[in-house]
Length: 336
Image (cartoon, rainbow, N blue to C red; front, side, top):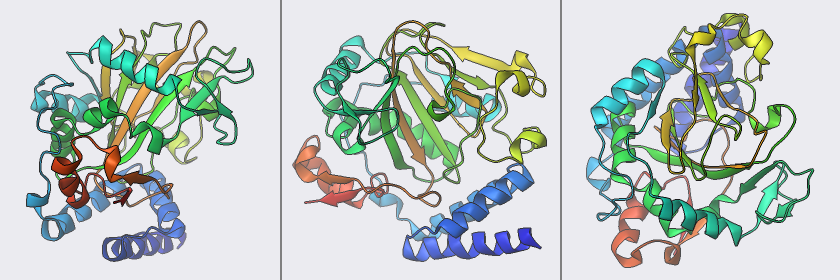
């Protein structure tokens, strides 16, 4: 009976979102519970419903290229990328982001305030932190003022991959930088134990290593194929958003499916993080990671309000009118 109530809450809440563009915690929790109960089947069908409604409600002509001269991300075979994600859950780009751009972004975040250990009241500088601070993030509105980050989030390759994977136009749902410092053991609050994400209906996360990452620096790791429906051990997924220790995790998961991704500065990954994944805890040196998340729609968990101003954008007069109309930036409050 409880799952019938959850189904009603999900469908009614989703339709309310489509009409009013507002999420409710009740419908989101119903979405999570049904996803876990059905091992992903319910999310698959709600995604199909979204795409069906989007076909009639969205105007494709509104989705224009937002930055025509954007060549930061080199041309890739979009079909190959999407086919690999569908099969394995992740894809590693053949080309990397150039070192100069990586260094420019690091120089930028070095000059602004971040916050430590997930506490937005603990303001810190990148190179001036106390030993007890092992994880640093930055505010999204500050990151999106950076011109290189703007070029990355608006680059055509990322958007084409999302468009083909979602079968609808993408929306940016998060832009973040995470700096991980050495610690003695994996921290659950820093996503350093295996888990899966479930804040939206369907999404992709693009990860860019802004520093060299070897086995000691906290590489990203995932379990191949666990993004597919009915792919996760029910003993794990029925718990919801819990983090799982390696000892317990690999008692049910074949370790041969584990993929640990090291790489030079500029290495680019894209993944459907409904797959089991984690970032290993660094034991030597820090890891700086840029993450851009695109989703097929904003239905799901509550998002923080982020204000962006006209003057913050590249080629303001040329792009801002398209940005205002675009689904891509619809998650943000655009202030003229």
